[in-house]
Amino acid sequence: MLNLQSSGSSKKATRSSNSARFVKSNLIRLRSKSHLGIIRKIHYNLGDMARVGSPLIEIEMEDESAASVEFGAAAAATIITAPVAQAASPASNKKDEYGEVLALPSARRLARDSGVDLRHVTGTGKDGIVTKGDVVMFKEIGGVGQVVQPSDARKSPAKKGDILATPAVRAFAREQGVDLAIVNGTGKEGRIMKEDIVHFKAAPLAAAPARAAAKAATPPPATTTPFATATTAPITDELKPLTSIQRAMFKQMTKSLAIPHFGFSDEITLNSCTNFRAVLNAQLARDPILGVRKISYMPIFIKALSLALSEFPVLNAKLVGEGDAKDVRLQYRASHNIGIAMDTPQGLLVPNVKNVQNKSILEIAAELERLRESAKKGLSSADMSSGTITLSNIGTIGGTLLHPVVVTGELCIGAIGKTQRLPRFEVVDGVEKVVAKEIMNVSWNADHRVVDGATMARFVQVWKRYLEEPGLIGR
Image (cartoon, rainbow, N blue to C red; front, side):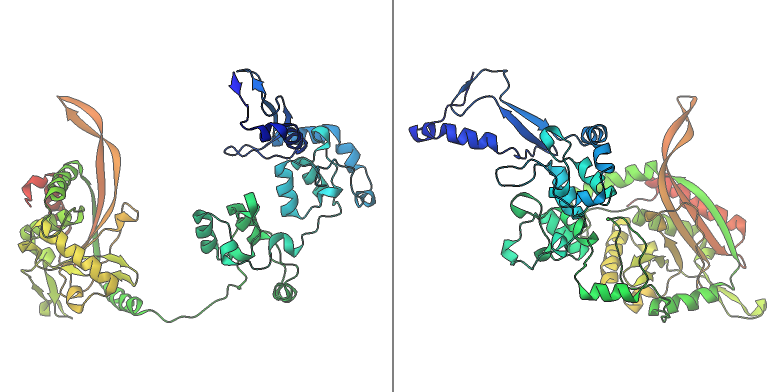
């Protein structure tokens, strides 16, 4: 048995009046997750003993689809065939003890958002309660009362301390540029919900002179959904000068048009490289070196590239001289200053890690971190100059096969595509099987005036071998 007995004689004395008042208030909203309903009957009075398993109360749960069907079957003909003039008079709906029309919570929300006066809507639900379907049908037949007043969407500014809203709703309001002080809250005790902000932005300002003047001066805007972000400023053509970085790119890429490009693409299996990196990061997590606690793939790629350049130094060289071929020389450079393309707030920048041939993977990682931090404030001219070859990791954004552009002063550039988990054939215990592999696409371009295809292909295969067998690299 469940004991609902209240303690105290004063509570027993008021049991009957409290119970009557509780039963009389029909529009008690139940909020359990997203369920809404109305208490229709209470089987026990305050202080009664209730048997386990027997019903305590009867709740009519709100069922939108059922309400719509009931409306269509019971009262569609009555309302649709009625003259519009008759809709102007208040409908004979049941009211609660406070004189408000009995309506489902969803019907009240829709009526409030649509500017519909529930007093003019005929309820077709149980005991004459107004359903959401009733409000929808009333709007479709152009019922009287369907006028949105400015006060329905906005109110006079409230004091900051009077605003009830959760942190998530406040953050959403900031994102939408909405002042919560002038938004009507539909939640409990006037709490502002996310839906209130959405409806606030979608509601027209019939009483706002500025909006009325703008409406008269411009053509009517196209119809949009309530969730569309509206813009009042017209989109016009605009002529802007290039930024400093765009000007530098314009000059450099214009010069690059004179370079005949030879492209070479391949794919690299990164499973061993991934394991190699995981071992390094596990050690760094326990014992950081040079302030490095974790490395990305890029330091490994850069070190492997330097080792490959040692075998193919022509790709680290540059052309000196112009005009006739007899006046042009190749300058072989000892320093491997490998440029790394970085997407910064200022635009694309390509600083370079100096003397990679003398650095370890961890030293390269520390230098990359320094360059990234410097890029936020502004890279120095020393960081940006004297590059010998460039590697772009555009795959962090997306893309597989790419076409990087060689710049003057260099003979080769590489671009790394995104890594994908793909099926590949592999011999396992003497049997050929399909296994999952981490595949990274790479694309290289070289100056075809001095770099032939065979040299480019062999160079990439050496770089690929170091990445697929990272134990050859060391640390």
